Amino acid sequence: MKKYAMTIGGRSVNASDHFEVLNPANGEVVGLAPKTTAADVDRAVAAARAAFPAWSAKPSAERAAACNAMADALKANAEELAQLLTREQGKPLSGLGSRFELGGAEGWTRYTASIDLPVEVIQHDDNAWIEVHHKPVGVVGSITPWNWPLMIAIWHVVPAIRAGNCVVLKPSPYTPLSTLRMGEILAAVLPPGVLNIVSDGPEAGPAMTSHPGIGKISFTGSTATGRKVMSSAAETLKRLTLELGGNDAGIVLPGCDPAKIAEGLFWGAFINNGQTCAALKRLYVHDSLYDATCEALVAFAKTVPVGDGLDEKNLLGPIQNRMQFDKVSGMVDAARAAGARILTGGVAPNGPGFFYPITLIADATEGMDIVDREQFGPALPIIRYSNVEDAIARANASENGLGGSIWSSDPKQARALASRLESGTAWINKHGDIRPDVPFGGVKASGIGVEFARQGLEENTVIQVIHQ
Ligand code: TXE
Image (tube, rainbow, N blue to C red; front, side, top):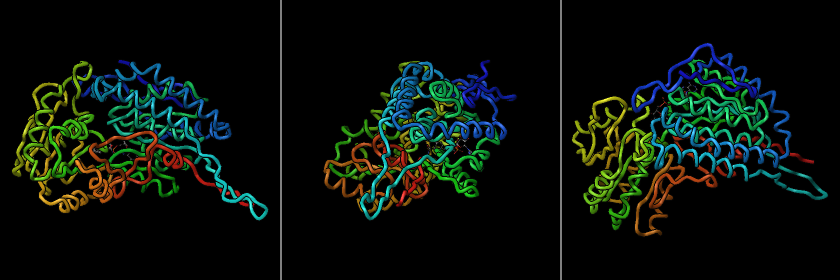
């Protein structure tokens, strides 16, 4: 069985101990990931710190060129990485799956290469010379989840490197292999120590969040772990960007045509089997088109093939891991027991793998876990409402605030209502449309700070004022 290695200081580093990474489609071992210790984290941070003076002193254009070289390397190795990603994550090669994720990773890298943070001049005259400089923080620690492991690693790593930082990256224990391999490929086009990739192990995450040599943590994961990261980082006053859970609401207004919006609603909710932070997780539908919307969604769901992601005809794969499978199936069972109607799905097939059918749940209400908490899986509760003001209030009655959407045939009304959603992004007639040139982040318990665009790049810097 292939043993994967860490990359520290530009060299491949083997661990003394390993753990198995399983294919969620069939339970087979995909490979062995190194078990990272606190001492490995120390070595990675030391390598990053050693590389920092030269890397941060490089002209911006040279760092931009290095980011473009990373994009070229991603492109050249995309198919190998996509295959490995499908085998350990479960998502299909096709559709909005692994190849799509690799394409996104390359696109985000190229766009991030193209942005810069020039010196801002406040005053240049005989009375004063005042400039604002954006300087790199030093070493950035990146901690990533298992749902979009490569894309999210790129979202953390590339802006950090572009801004002049050096990085230590730690993937989730569920999906470390594709990140270890991608890291090896990317580190090879950078000076040694600029990008270091460790793996998981009980000591690894806490060693990073408390490490005095790390100046900032970029974290994407659950709100519960985000709180631990923030608390652990407090001692050393690290900068933080936290992209945490979401429980995004979508509101379908009277006057919509259910047949026209069904496909957008479906993929807004079921992209990556619903295992997406800014997926549509609660759908509020007006009474006047409730039944028609349910029917249109069921009809669309029946056209989507689910199965092993290596089979190119499939558009959705298994749930990624046992913990998530149990969470989703438990929430669906509880909703059914509380009186919700399962329109399609709701019963897992026998056999290997964490397969769970596309599940649409009518007559769902607040008070059910599947409405109140993030399900993070292929099951969408559809909630009836009769008053738009009431729907907005119910959408906002959540500790989360990542995304939200308004579905309407009246653009002016839609924009007015969108601005009243308590969410980092409010989409209109779509959900989850993210772009590298548009800042993205959560409010309330969904996070702190933003990623992407100039604003995301700025979060990888500290400000220094030169004042004469
Ligand atoms: O996430 P964790 P888990 C949600 C989703 C899911 C739940 C749990 O609802 O059911 O989170 O998933 C690392 N110090 N999301 O347990 O624990 C961990 O190794 C430092 C939403 O997989 O948040 C991994 O690399 N690091 C989310 C990363 O944190 C620690 C995506 C995320 O794991 C740590 C994933 C610690 N003490 C799950 N403990 C989204 N917003 O997209 C764990 N980690």
